[in-house]
Image (cartoon, rainbow, N blue to C red; front, side):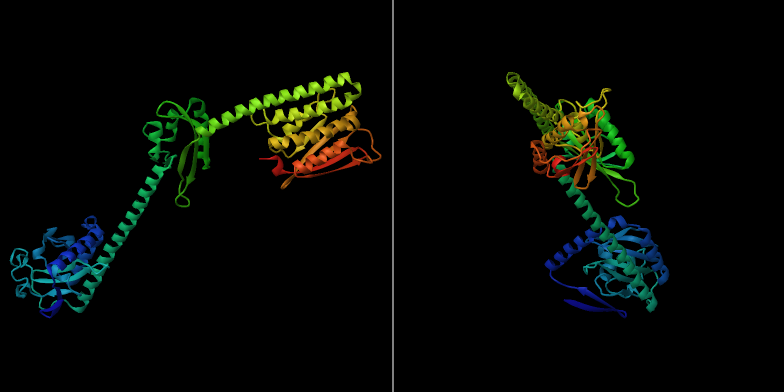
Length: 510
């Protein structure tokens, strides 16, 4: 319950209750006080300015921002007093903070609670006191903003001074609450950062961040687990851990990405703690926290050693299969010619079959190269197919121009069959049957498709189109529509055959 005590014209409310109630209240106050971390605000310049102004406003020599704890009161800011704290049992503010408004003591020697107080009877000689409670948002009293005089003041404070003291106390609390909110935000950020770091430490990748000065400011624990070494200080220190055959290319790529503020990606072998080498995929991206701010970098190292070993095993198997398939082509071609030697009437058919098999063999060899990288391009495949068709000076008679594209293995066979058929027909009946005849193959990008135009020039002049389609035309039709998901049409112009093949990019490219 509350009791009301009249103090020379002022009103004050004190709290009474059981010992248990007081203990619980004390614990609650201690928790609230702790949440402000007030030690960091001692002698704060803004609080000092408030106490100076309070002293001037109320025309007193002493003004304090007093925080009341269990056994002491201490002063966050003080004007006109050297001491930083006094015992709680002599504290005027411990009484003031329990009220709803300012507690004013015009003459302490006449107040029964303070007449025998050491601060009144001793050298401090307190006579006049006015304290405005400092109360947290939860309603917990923390202390008081007080003004003190060594002379009694029967007239107390005027209305303007009372209002001013209340406004200044509100300013103190706004500053304290702002600090508490800032601390809460900082703790929340720190907690999230700690949670993030624990999470990053738990991932299987090596994760890191690099400052704008090129120094690592974070490398997760996986680095030491994998390498057995302390984290490098800068990116150039990677060299000591990268395989000598990979170091220059990797660091050159890194410097290029750094200079251009572009994402970095590289594969290299990393030396592990046991001295073995493991393939790693390094990836990093530049990130600016604020627009216009210089980038910092965040990256990872992912162990891809098993993937590399699987690729090596696959390539070894593919090479062995390729070698055997080439041998099969050679055996079949040899058998066809051997049979034709004993049956002259079958020789033209055997030669046609052998040429078709040669074309398929060249296509297969092209898309399954033995140790040569980067050949799987449409221009390269077609050039290999047309290599036998050259003039007396060794120059190609079939020229290829326009859009290039990658070619997957499944598309190489139908492409080889189609253009082998066009080339052999031209060599028998069209432009390539004449010494000066040529073929122009132009490839045009049509969005989702490629248009391949075969145009013959310099061959026998054509007056009439063939009356019917032969096996070769049907073979082209099946290959283009069935396997390349496209269409084709041909027309016979006076200068020679023009064939237009439209094929789906998705059917020939990865």
